[in-house]
View (cartoon, rainbow, N blue to C red):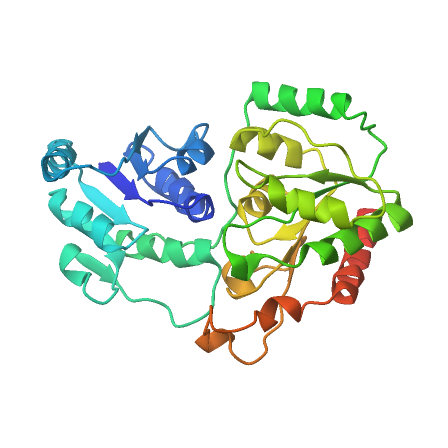
Length: 334
């Protein structure tokens, strides 16, 4: 069988499909798996051994380019399409692929695109678990939701050289800190991150290593400016797989709900994440694990009114609560 898997946009969402990719490969070992996504999310799949091909989608600039794209997709003669994304564009891709089996969520106005529309769960569940529901029509039952993201040898070498450059010793307690997000409802106040960073340095002699991507340096500047203690210096922005290799070497990761947090989950580094608008359960592995989350519900998370609110959900997570949770986690590391 030839499978086409679709998940456009967002690095975290693409990572959440990786348990399903693995399960498909294990269930259909002779199948050919092709994944359609957009940059830069394709980077998290480059070393994935369960995929045969990655197609990079670029938004067509004209109607003729759109028609050309659909013709090329149809010419591939896929046997099964699984649309993990489920927006109007991916629904059209699924329908006009010509695949005899087309699976996607039964979102309003989308069921026409699929031969097997899957009802949406009303429960608040881990996003990887949600996406794995789409394997049901193929007779696949999922219970392993570990994320897959693989660094190659050059990424590992890069991380080793970076730690040497920053004069980080093997015995050092290194905490990666990622106070960034493009979404304001995910950004915990920088002065609070600064207080936590200072507390980690003072009480645990931690070395604070900032993680950020292109255009996100101002988040780091805000935290660094508010800190009283010294953090590790900045360095050239790494690729996504290099960031994964860095996270593989740190002891603990702290930050907002963002891509680096999911990378840390994928490589097994303990994480503490502060959540605002989305429910933590949507983005935190369901089993009791080393990955923890803090959130505050002022009574409106189920009926969010952002941007009309004052982000009480974010501001309700206190410095003291984060310190308490970190203390528990650090005890388990020793």
